[in-house]
Length: 228
Ligand code: SAM
View 1 (tube, helix red, strand yellow):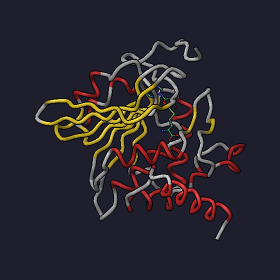
View 2 (view 1 turned 90 degrees about the vertical axis):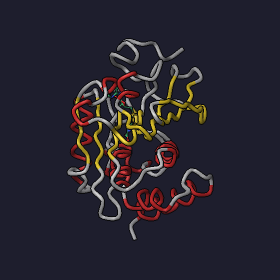
View 3 (view 1 turned 90 degrees about the horizontal axis):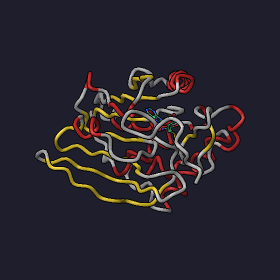
View 4 (view 1 turned 60 degrees about the vertical axis):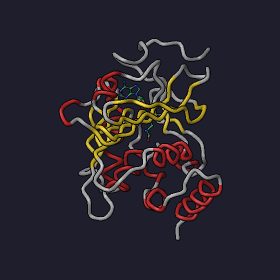
């Protein structure tokens, strides 16, 4: 067993102990997707620290406990069509693709990233784990959603916006779940869970979180000051 395999197992035990991982599909995904292949080479020795790590252009790969929390909140099912806003390294998309493709069901993840260099980085990382067929990475403004293939069973946003983008609510299927952090960085951002049932939206605050800003037409302006 390699050092990374051991560290991965330790991380999963830690996430289970703290209650972030509590279902078998999420546990299996964490054990089977090597996080060290998704972080830049300079960060590889820290790949199994439960903390965010820098990718490029001032962006981050989220902490594993946040990936776990969002995967569990979304109640991912085999065959789900999922939209992710904020591909970053592609790690979270890989975990989700693994979960929605179990039981021989062909679930799919559409993941949008606004920084081209990161969209390319994610595509090459997804190839390393043979998940490139199950994740479509799109370079663009994710606050517009992806109407070409909507509606989606589940939608997650991995950057914090000022409000829930209307296109994402429209593109969520009836019965679907949307998970999004809202608020300014370093102010109190809240992770929200939205469900749609018979066209009615219900919203619940899950916890306080810290994410990079969601920048786009239905997000913040590109020069948003998130440091105060
Ligand atoms: N899910 C990622 C992973 O597994 O590595 C981490 C995402 S990182 C915390 C947030 C990402 O959202 C950044 O890469 C950032 O460039 C991206 N982002 C911000 N606004 C966006 C938008 N409007 N559309 C698409 N991506 C956006």
